[in-house]
Image (tube, rainbow, N blue to C red; front, side, top):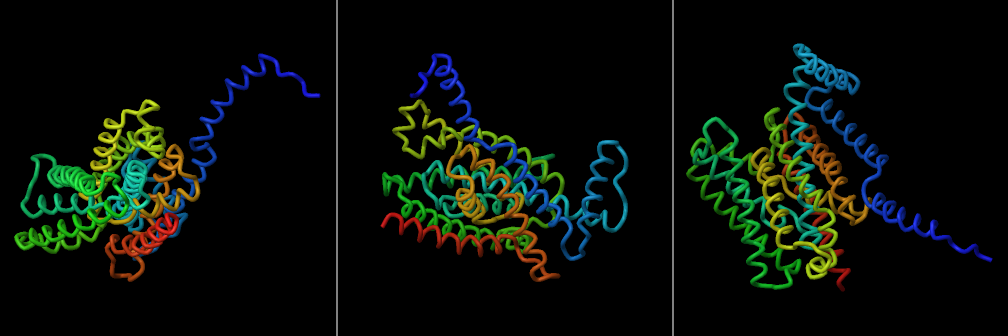
Length: 367
């Protein structure tokens, strides 16, 4: 015979169950530790390997020594290996990790917002729009006095946001349901239009043509600690806004009308997320050029591991995007050593294959 439940038991159960459920929705400390450890290992490997390999233990010792010297106010360690790690590879790998994290978060946010597994800055044409703005700034010397990156970055951000608005507006006019096929079609058409305008601008670029041509394929060579600071600030602010909107992104999964009924301010959330995504894409494009498919590949793979809940997916995307792009950058550096491939070539090759796979699965699921 079952023991009757006491009032205190019932109250305690109703009080603790929601708390336990809410806690399980997000990342557990052990999961953070595992993802952080994997990211750190990839970071060390990418710093150690290249045209001149440095042992992993030596690489870790150099980085740790530089951190200690920085906090103590002492000069940085001197030497050939120290110069390679601290002046060349460390800022590049840090910039690569931050760009990968930011683009991955953008992809997760756009896929959740549009309920579209193929949504990404590259597939929707937003990255192409940002590239167009940056190319115009480079070709015609758009600058802000005292801020060398502000002209290119500002133009990239403005064009990224404008491109997203144009693409979604055209898709909505053609198809009120904003279906996958319509959005992707408009994105491809806009990307072709942006590419043609970039080619037109390059004819007037003069001496900047070679720089623009390599930059449009994506490259993080020559990254500096200034780039690291800018990328870190963009990811902290805009990525933080996306992370805080995880609950709203989960609500969008059941439809905008249902999201309104549970108290979500749909218009404000959509505008906030679109601005945040546009800023991150614009900053990433202004630093590393066009690096496609990162936001498509990593959220899709991580969704299989951590599930569709954005309270788990977005933190996982930060780590996963960083690892994916660091390994892609390492591949671009060592695959044809001493030649270096543009990182956008590597990510596009991987992303194009996965794009076909995701599209096939989504169509098969509907069938």
